[in-house]
Image (cartoon, rainbow, N blue to C red):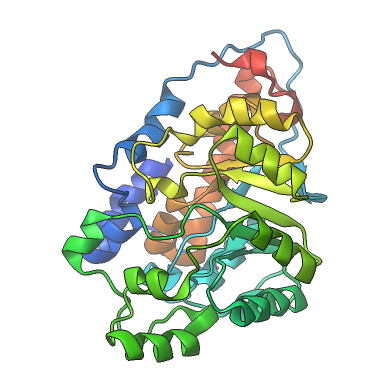
Length: 363
């Protein structure tokens, strides 16, 4: 993993975005960064973390600290996973393979997106890291079934079903830029199916057309039960935003939920995910694991999320900025920076173990 970082190596996650913005084409940067409509939720995801205060304990022995945790029975180096994000080959020629290599070296889990520009087979072959697969449920149930069976056979460790996207949110930057994948790139998981169906409709492989014509807008809880019936993997629901839906998820036997507003790319003006977390965690009451994505930019954010009831967080856009700047080495540095910040925050908060991040630390 040879580094090509600039002389002024980024020292925080925001600096990675600053560099990535200079490298990426405008259409791609806008796609990665943008949110829905007025981007109110996009801003809130970050600012809500900043509004939370930490109340550190003192005179605690923090000479040795342990960031490791266990998610769905697997021990990882820190309570940070890589969130499913689309089209990594727009950021780096090695794309999702570079991300998987960074996850492996960091000792954490990568959630592979259905909108990957690399096949699940190639990603699995490239890494020793544990992989989860993020699934959209297609109108074509046999296509859905084949993908589920495919990733289970490949050794993916969990199925992460996105439940907040019956249609694509209106991302005005993408509308203005007429965003679509460039020639030579496709949604690798369903590449042949996508090409055939898009040619029938308009010949345009834009993301809006993909969602409107391949994904099923009639999905309900019975479809989660159906996935359970054809899959032996743990099931994680991504996109839970209400306490009653969280309780229903428990009733349907899922193994974990991800509190997520899709990176603020679906319904604008929903709350920041960190603000959704406390009531949902209370409703779950430890019955299943609770994860969170959206707005994590600092190690202190990790501590705050765990103190408010999350078992771990997922990191999305910063991984893409790291990939853009320096491929696998850049993504790894992003994870390393966040790990070091989290470790420092633990020491300063009086936390020898990450599991000691309890509610009394935050206000």
